[in-house]
Image (cartoon, rainbow, N blue to C red; front, side):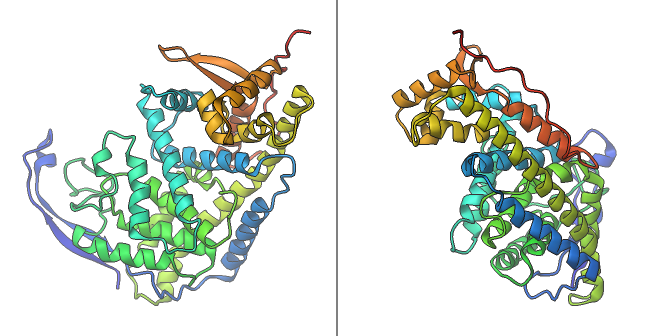
Length: 425
């Protein structure tokens, strides 16, 4: 059964104060395995879970006849990644992210380390979705690769893709776990717990939404890496939802909600750590608070994301009216469809997005710039030439604010967009 194990922290000659340098005894938590857990759910909670799963299906069945599936998918994945980073205290305005992204795409170094770390989370989330896109089991190597991609852009890239071999903890001193708020399992327990978690992820013992929530809570309980556990654990949510076929096209940006509901989020994960018998009703009840928070946040994120889809569809229709006649399957046609998910592009990055030559893509960018769909920006000391899609950043900010609102405001109109920069006639 789940238990607290008493461990000893030996004194270290580190830290500014005597307390930082002291030794102590501390309790580390060992969770029960997940495989075979006969989880019991209250009737009202089961109904809420069904409603949230239906909301995810509605989001993925959104009628996007006039907006690119891939463009919308990229946008929502970006929103989820930004929200997940925000939970860890990593927050940057959309313009900062895009400037850093453009600098990197052009082969330069982005000086904005905060923005670079958030971009790393976007890459990790993309890796997570890719790993769940096949019928193959989600493996140890898949998990390590997600973490490696996340850490690649941080100051601790050397920790990427490596299961920890030392004790970690949450809260208290930087130097010892003596006054920590939570101490995860000692390293000797971690490999078996991770193996059990992977077995659970590859099972279908529980409904998809329950499985995603429980897998995330167990991952955070294990805390298998020295750093980056929160962001990797939230990527696992989307691995499960994608693998189970509940979210095949669009990820619900649930992290933008959880970033606002931080106290409920932490409380739910804390209550998940029970000390009851493995198959007991008490163990199931310990998970109910977290499941309620996760379920409500998921449903809210889906409703707001659907509202956003209609707004981006309207924006793309406006773009097409500005451009005029567009040949189907042309570079212009493909680029317009991709811009919602890539609101700032270079010629090279746009060519890669639409699978066309840089010559054809450059011509398409010129046409969209002349029509007022794109505007040229020069960034960095090198004055790199990039192109921003008019209106997308406003909508991105609108979605973030709506999801971050405690009650939501999905019926409000998005910010007024400036009149298009039409070419002189």
